[in-house]
Image 1 (cartoon, rainbow, N blue to C red):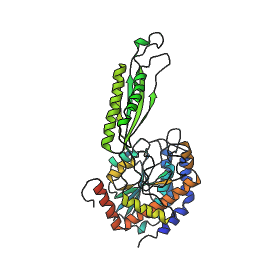
Image 2 (image 1 turned 90 degrees about the vertical axis):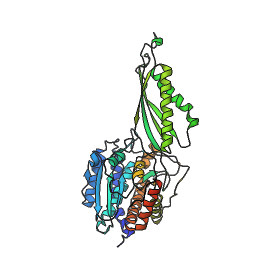
Image 3 (image 1 turned 45 degrees about the vertical axis):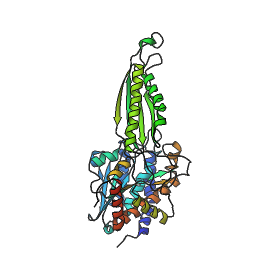
Image 4 (image 1 turned 180 degrees about the vertical axis):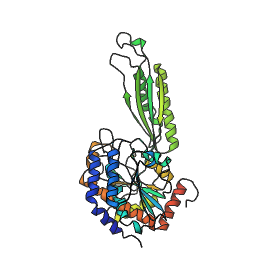
Length: 396
């Protein structure tokens, strides 16, 4: 018998205090990527306490990753994902505390109807979205094997069902020159800092050649040793983003060329250390639209997309290339009022509006998961779209 969707809503409502307390607790104790030990423990304890389901901790070899499962074992498997890492200094300015609580809420709502599920539901706690790529490591550790579709939601300043994200990577650059006394004999030195700063200027000169959607931004991590020493060492880090992987690699080559050119001009050495980033997000529109239907049934209407909204990057992009996925955005503030990675956004991530949105997201995800488990034609359309977008054969 199909699940009564209103019963899922009531289950989330009955857990609202628990979910709010979890979101606030994580918010007030921000932890950086791969260090989310408190958050992971609180999430696992909450799931176990209110479901009786054992939560695997340290999933896929990551100390702060989690995995729990309910269902009959037969039928499709749908995963709901949680994030819970914070940003340096500005804490949960990306709202991952709400993402975690929303995923817990959706999972616990479905737990109450585990015997009626026409398949399996998995809760996967994914650490280190902020630059660590925890989902990628879990993917490579086969944690997502057997999952037919995956979903999560993200706080934002507007409701969007299929907001794109950019492919990205990071480049660490270390410059080594020759020190000298900056006043007595500056001519004897070769400034690593000058080469580092010239790299930024050269990158800026190349922006006219970047395609639409490209973002290149960086900061100096080591600017020298003292004011009266020609800097022997300097370092910086760049993030390179683009809509497509081919453009990402083209722009990466330009940025690296700028660094080498600056080093050559200044007579110093440069070491460029690439760090793997994320793939672009491919939202599954069939699944996104069904999530949108669930939102409408809950009294909230979302745009399919919004070209005016800026694009970031997420390791959910890598999941979306491996499994049909959605990553809808739901507003916790007025449009344009603030944005992710701003201090004001962190305030909204613990506000009543943020909590209320998290509860709506939990209900909409629970409803969408139930739809995917019960509606064979929906899941078939989801898989067909995924196969076509990835140029692979039929997915069964």
